[in-house]
Amino acid sequence: MYAIVNIAGTQFKVAKDQYIYAPKIDGETGSSVSFDQVLLVDNGGKVQIGAPTVQGIKVSGKILEHVKGNKVIVFKKKRRKGYTVKNGHRQQFTKIQIESIG
Image 1 (cartoon, one colour):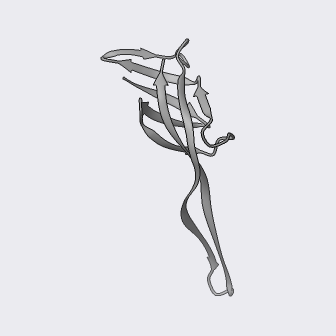
Image 2 (cartoon, rainbow, N blue to C red):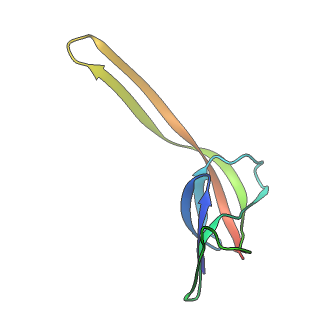
């Protein structure tokens, strides 16, 4: 059984006991979260497609930790002008374990 869920504007294919890294979600480590924007559910070949969401289905999970992604270097340059700017960015993520679908 798997589902496609919209979490903070990003779609994830999730299954039970799976770990995902979603954009940062407010909540303490160890607290439970539920997502009600389920777009598709597949239960052993029986597929339910939402219009736009599947009614009566929720995906619940547990927040394991808040982490940062890899560093991305942003480098800007204008040739022959002596202009260079170098910045870095690390995106914030939340590690979630999917506990149940249904």
